[in-house]
Image 1: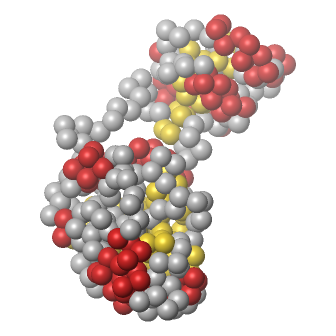
Image 2: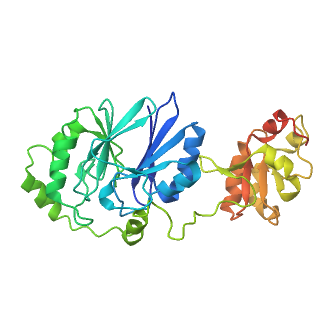
Image 3: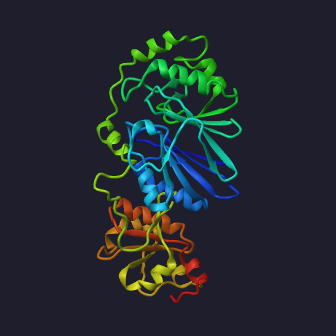
Length: 350
């Protein structure tokens, strides 16, 4: 299996991409609305097919990316039916098995943080995605959304601590930079529920946390009860001047074929040296030459009346040039994917 742990700094949320390498089937667990471009780029670059976006619970600190992924990639949205949320394609019930190519994820009901929390366990019980039920050396708060510390104690003890000691715990959040743990570690060392802790110990601990409510709660919960669908039904705008694709590295790119057919609609900025500009690969007619080493000091010389396509030999130096222009608040900018080598290999006229 492919497992990728992704992080949203604003909400300290971990998102997980889980995929079967031979078939390319994939699921995304606890996605974040604002991280759609990043997650979609990773799925595309790894050559995967996203089957489902699964939420371990109705989040209070961020909006799920489920709806955006459904619109963009045709994936189905999964959430426990306890929330009675709209736009849900796959009600996650205790005992359900979600097939991901040759692998699978078992749904285990682990309520207590909220009344609909689930954890997802892979078929050989070596990985568990615990959402906010069990955290690294912690457990999800129980003071809103029908949370119940008694119920959470039983969920962790009966559904999670019964997994093998070496089962890796992947939590929904961490605020200290910890990325994972194991069931054995948490059973022994978790200060809230580990060791010889009894139910009354856990309940007393959770009842006295005195945490402020999440800042985005008033926005996140209603949105998540719509499966992440914006209230007006519109997804955020994407670049309208061409088929710009955001890479997993966070770089806007555009293909050589489109640029070849729309040369008059864009300004081409070549960031190679003068020798390369006139060298074997040649250059695009009408391109502005502005070597990368001089770009920061001369960025004001780049016209802004058209979208700017940045080019170099292979698309590497122009990637940095693109980032420099974006940092200088040029909004319509994209890197030419593959650069002049890709242009030549495509047999396009310069």
